[in-house]
Image (cartoon, rainbow, N blue to C red; front, side):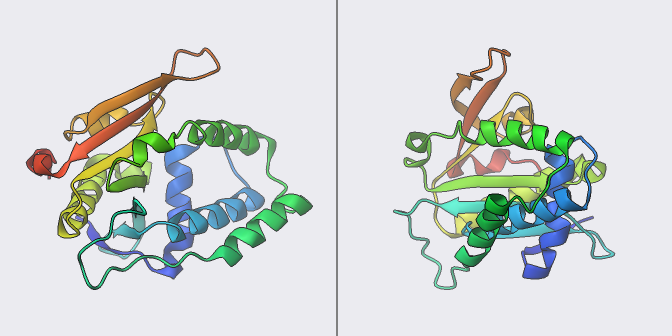
Length: 215
C-alpha cells in the first residue's frame, strides 16, 4: 500500500504538510505554511536519517526521523546522516528576529503550546539510549497502517545499525497508545506544568523485542 524510501530534499513541502496535519488543528495561511516548511526542513536535517512513505501515485503521506546519540556510531559503512544545514537555521532565526513570519493568531497559539511541550524533553533520558525516534508524522487520512509501516522501517534501520535501545518523547494529548500497542515500555512520565492533568511521557523499545512490532 505504501512505499518507504529515504527522504529527499524535494520532499520537504509534503513533509511539512504531513507535520501540520498530524500536530495542528487550526486553519493556516501562507505565512504559517512558510514557517512550517522551514521548521520541518531544520528538524529533518538535524536528524541522522529520515524515511518517507508515499502512495502508488508518489504522494508523500508520512515520514519518520531518527537521531543517534553522539556516543553511538553505527557499524554500517554507508551511514547516510542528513547534513546539518546551519544556514537554514540562521535564516529561520533571522526571520523570527525581524518579525517576517507574521503567523496567524490561531496558529501561533497552537505553536506556542507545541513548543512548550518540546521543552519537557530531558537529556538524561536520551543520553542512555542509542537512538531517539525524533519525529513520526503522517496524514490523518492515511493513518490506518501507515504509522506501523514507518515504525517497522525505523526498527529495521536501527537493527541494521546495531542499535539496542530506542526512546521517544510523546504526551497524553498525542498518540501514546500507538506505541504501547507496539511494544514500547513507558520509562518516565511528568505532569504538564499548567495543572491540566496531561502528562509528558518517555517510552523505550529494546531491539530484542522487535518481533512485537505489528506489520
